[in-house]
View 1: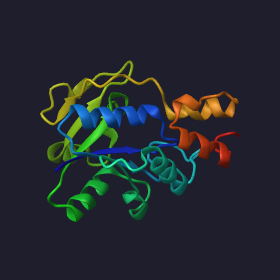
View 2: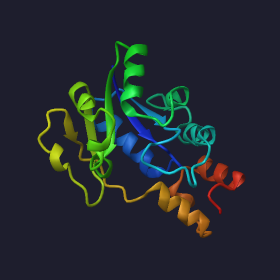
View 3: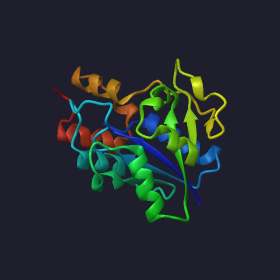
View 4: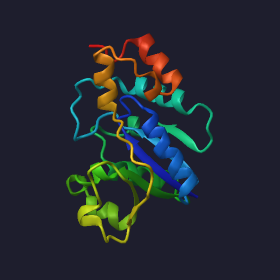
Length: 191
C-alpha cells in the first residue's frame, strides 16, 4: 500500500489542501493520504500558530469520514520541532509493509536542501511535488525520486486565510464549512 504523507501546520486547513489531497488520491498511484499535523515546523515561527490539538480538530472536521484522506497526529508524540526524517523513521518502524511517499509543494521544495538529512530522505523515499505559482523543481528537476504531479495550482495559503480573518473578511468559501464554523466559534485568527 502506497501512502502519501502530506505534512503541514494546517493553520488552518483550507480548500487548497483538500483539493491537492483529493487530486493526489485520484490521479496518482497513492492509496491513502495522511494529513500529518506538525506541532512545530522548524522553519516557521510560533506566532499566530493555533494549538496543535485545535489544528488536528480542524483537519478532522475537514475530512470527516473520508476513508482515503486521514488526519494524523503522529508528530504530537515525537520530539519538537518536527523533522520529517524522524517522522519517516518512526513510521517505517511502525508500518514496515507500507510504502511512504512525501507530498510537497514546489515552493517548499526550494528549501528542501535545508531539511535535516535531506539526502537520506531523497535516497529512501519518493517525493511527489505539486506545483505552486512561481516555483519549479529547480535542482531536483532530474532527480530519480522527485516527480512533478500536474495538479491544479492553488494560490490559497493559510497565511492568506489568517490575514483575511484578522481583517474581518468573509472567507467562508475558502474553508470547508465545519472548519469555518469552528474557527468562528473559537475566534481563531481574529487578533
